Image (cartoon, rainbow, N blue to C red; front, side):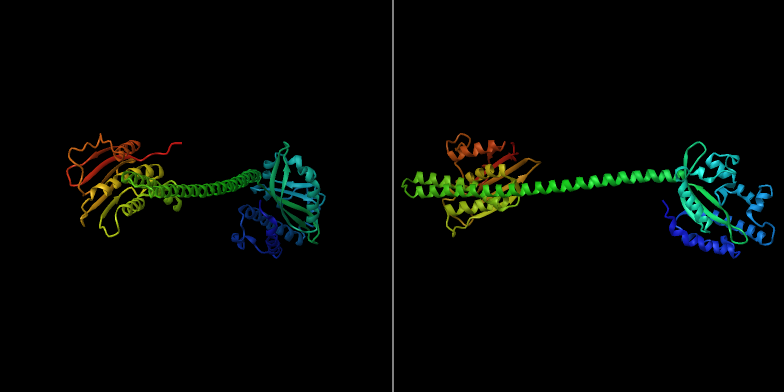
Length: 436
C-alpha cells in the first residue's frame, strides 16, 4: 500500500497556498508523486480547499459568520452544492462528528441515502475502528489535515477500503467548526493488493522451498561427487594392484624359464609373458588416466609394440612401425581383448616374419572406425609371409587358435590378404559393450 506519511509535507504547503489566496492547480507538480491515487486525492483535497477558501472569504465579508449560522439558514450549504458534481465521495461533519452534508458519490459508494446519514454520527460508518476515528476527529479539531487509509461500513454491511483526506473547517476567528473528508474507493485496488501479497507470499514460500531443495540437491550432488571420487580412487588402486600382480606373474615366469634348457619351453614361457604384459599395460594406463572406462588406444599400441620389440630384437634393428588409429579411445572391455589379439599377431610377425633382417622391414596397424560399434583392423608385415598351402582356418597353432577365439569374442571375422608380400590380416569387429 501507499506510504501516506511521506506526502504530509506537501499538503501542508498547499494549504498555505490556499490560505494566502493562491490557486494550487497552477502549481501542482505531479512529478513529485509516485502514486497516481495520491495525486487524485490531493487534487480533490485542494479543490475543496479552494472552495472553502471562498467560503472563508465570504465569512470575512460578513456574509456567513459561522458554520452553525449556516445551519440556521435552513440547513442548506449553498457553497457545498458543488460536492454533487464531484466524482469522489465527500462527507462534512461538525466537531461532534455529526454528519451535516454528503454528496451523491459518497452515497453511491456506501449504499446509504442522504437521509440515512444527515444528522447521524460518522462513527457508525467505521464500526470497530470508531476509537481510531475519534482520534482523527480530535486531530482535525486541532487544525491538522490528514491523509489516511481506512475501512468504511456500507449500508449492506459490506466493508469497503478507502483513502480519506480529512481537513478542518475554520471560521473567521480560526476556530474549528467541523471537518470535511474526501474519500477515494480503493477496495478493488486493496483486494488486488491483498491477492498480490498472498501470491507474493506463496512465491516467496515457493522460492524458499526451491532454495532449500537446491541446497539439498547441492549437498546430495557433493555427496555423490565425493562417493565417485572415492570409488575412482579405489578403482585406480585396483588397476594398479592388478598391474603389479600381472608383473609379478611375468617375473615368476621369467625366473622359472631361467631353469629351462628346452627351447620350445622357453618360447612358451616367453609368449605367455608377452600375453600377460599386454593386459598389464591396459591396467597401468587406466591407473594413470582420469577416465577409468577407456584408454587412448594409439598410446597403448605404441607401448605394446615397444614392449614386444624389446623381447625379440636389439635396439640396432631398424624396424619401421606404421600406426594409424582413427578410434582414439577404446573402452576397457574392448581394449584387453583387442590387445591380446594384436599381441598374438605381432608376436608371430616378430618370431617368423623377419628371418632376414632388412632396413625395409615394416609392421603396420590400422584401425578404421565405421558406424559405431563397427571397426576394421588391418594388421600385418612385409616379411616372408606364410606358405601358399598354409590353411589359416584349420591351423593347430595355439597362436592362430587364440586369434580365432579372440575375434569371435569381438563379434567379428578374420581373413588373410595374400595379394601382397608378407602376412596381412583384415579383421572386422565390434566394440564390446559392458554388461553387468
